[in-house]
Image (cartoon, rainbow, N blue to C red):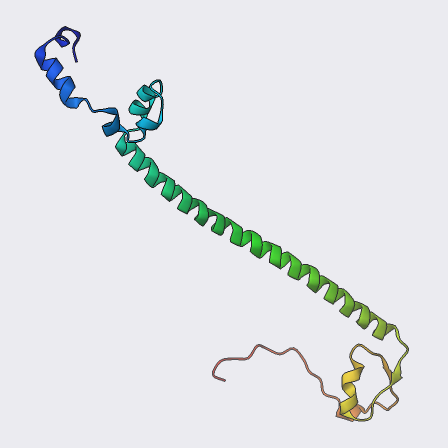
Amino acid sequence: QDSHNLGSPRAEAGSRAGARTAEERSPHAARYSADDLPFLLCCHSTEERKRSAGMAAVSSRSKVLGRVLMGAPIIGTFSLGIWQARRYTEKVEQIAGREAGLAAPPGPAPSSPEGWEALHYRRVAVRGAFMHGSSILIGPRSPPQRGA
């Protein structure tokens, strides 16, 4: 309002109409001392409290959602790291077993196909004659054609 209208009856009536008690402005004002009232009344209107309460609810929901969305990849990455460590030890054991089998002296070849399973990564000693008449030349082949 203008400074020359401050003492007028119209200005006084307007100020009374817009004035609210401390309880109307902030129901929590009674909890604070008289020195705190001007700060509370100017900074904590009912609308502001409603808005801040809504924002707090949204922010707590978004915090939970953010933690879930950030935690899932972290937990997934950690699980994959553990899986890789276990797989590494398995592969090292497999390689050591294969190297030991290949380093062993050659043994006799089994006479029946049932014993071939034990020959994985093992050397065998065989005797025989190569039959040149039964050999087949397999040259470069093209990929399979559809519909042919």
